[in-house]
Length: 139
Image 1 (cartoon, one colour):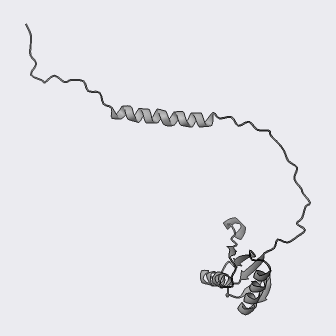
Image 2 (cartoon, one colour; image 1 turned 180 degrees about the vertical axis):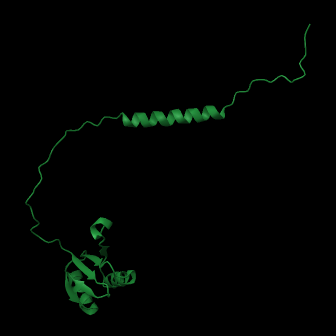
Image 3 (tube, helix red, strand yellow; image 1 turned 90 degrees about the vertical axis):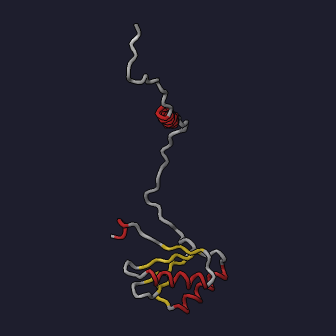
């Protein structure tokens, strides 16, 4: 005799989303392991270092320093803005790619630095950089 259950019979389902997740995990794990397994063939070389060497020539550049009051100095010598303009134009006439580094005092305002940067760019200098120090070097 066959007994019929009042509960409906459940059919098994194959869930595919967890299988996709597992396949992506296996793919990522395989990629990471295969990248770490690459052996670079190279020759280990210990190059000698100079301990007493000093630079004999100063690199061709101009450093414009801005103090906390907005006054400028060219390579450490105080100058006015007309003198700075004349100096930059003479350097630009000799070398079209003359680099200028702008550095400021710790308490110099951002506006003073940007003003000097704008002034240098108006003089025709295209290679301008702002010198920065790391937090550890500034202390």
